[in-house]
Amino acid sequence: MSAASPATEPAKRLLLAKPRGYCAGVDRAVIAVEKALELHGPPVYVRKEIVHNRHVVETLRERGVIFVDETSEVPEGELVVFSAHGVSPAVHAEAAERNLRTIDATCPLVTKVHKEVNRFAKDDYDILLIGHHGHEEVEGTSGEAPDHVQLVDTPDDAASVQVRDPSKVVWLSQTTLSVDETMERVDQLRERFPGLADPPSDDICYATSNRQIAVKAMAAECDLVLVVGSRNSSNSKRLVEVALQAGARDAHLIDFAREVDESWLDGVTTVGVTSGASVPDVLVMDLLAWLAERGWGQVEEVTTANEKIAFALPRELRQATK
Ligand code: SF4
Picture (cartoon, rainbow, N blue to C red):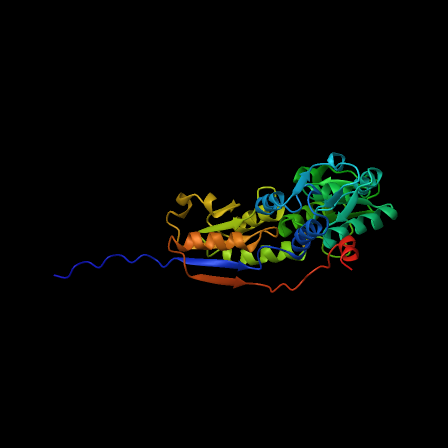
């Protein structure tokens, strides 16, 4: 009589999305603060979180950065860095009034949207800005032309927004939205305003869309997708939603490996890992080490794009380092 052979467990797989993590705008903003610390010494003030990541903010705070909510909290004459999410002209004006020295680390791709707002406002368009209520980027972008911009966040907003002349209306967007959800909102608006003009080029940035494409490519194979990113990071939150919509059985957003609840791994064979555009890769490496200790040691990278974009440092730092 032969003994029954033990059931073999399916092999554990770990899929790692590429691209993931730092984008060119975040890299530039973090380097800008580090350079400001080097050149001027602490304290360096930063208005809002330089990028939406707990680890980055805590590390810079330890090095002498003081994060403030408003420019009015910065003592007269001090140095303040504006975050990657951008600020409105009113914030620049207030900083000038208080004789603050400024470094503007607004991502060039956010600045591009600000310029579009100015151009369409000059031509007296109604601008429907698709974005998330209360997000700093949206506040800065709307502030370029508050009389022309209306925020469209929810389907209800798209159903109720009013414009002066339906033949002169354009949609623009926050840079870090879900590509698919944004197009749903645009379709809804276009049904109401058939003459709705498109942005001159995509406002959702290359980093946001590339990270969504990468997570989509692996999601259907994953029992669990872990997205490294902070709760206030728009593009990171979108990665969780996109993973679930693309077929992942479960998905969670975590700042650090220690936040993974072991029960999430029950019955899981394939884990997918990615990270938001404001996340340093060291946090992903920590998560991979944590997963390796639990049997997910073999990493298969799922590559959908190779990013080579880099931005020059803010003008004020280029001048200072000359
Ligand atoms: S996510 Fe996009 S818009 Fe935001 S900082 Fe990165 S590159 Fe710039």
